[in-house]
Length: 125
Image (tube, rainbow, N blue to C red):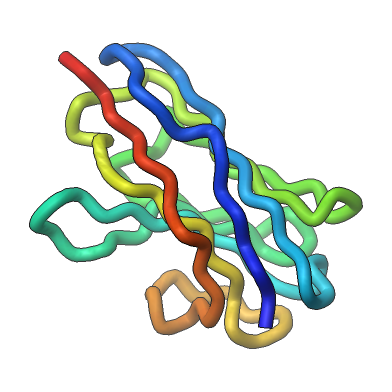
């Protein structure tokens, strides 16, 4: 089991930027893919992006391609989500997640066994 703590959410105007961080503890961080998901009010949780254990194998949802960037620092047990050109439709609670199995590369919520508490991102128009 791994513990995840997100930070960096907040209120920003459309077109602005935010950087989310997720600090992990409790197991070998570098062996697991990490992902970001989001859930808007009244909607299902959706995949945003995933990064493989070595920093490669990056995937993005079409809705965030070209605007969001995921990265990780294994030495700091931390994964980041840089969000640029934010839109009101990006408003959601953002969750950090750790892969269930070592060296896995899933994108479904069920491929991730540990979740953070979430951080609110609100983009005003």
